Image (cartoon, rainbow, N blue to C red; front, side, top):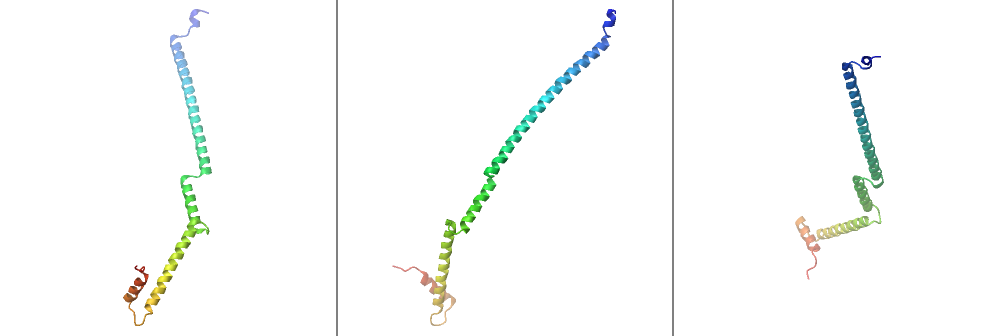
Length: 136
């Protein structure tokens, strides 16, 4: 073999060199792209883990709106359950209002039963006079 046969044509050597350069560049590009993909997947998986932790915490502790609903429900339950403060206060206030209505009704009937015909204005004046606290 001669020396001429061992060496390729310079144009072919140039093309082979360029192809080898492109091949190496492509390998580097693919390696960088795969590495970036793994980084992105790692971040997504980590964030998904955080999201799962947040969901679990919300299920255990309740969301803020859910907590407000629970508080409101407890408040309502306190006002409709005998023995609780809100319910007992409501009962006392209702009893006081009914007592006042009964007292005013009794006074109104008494003022209307005075001798002679009474006008509405006269009955009102009589009721008002009866309801005024005694002057000392």
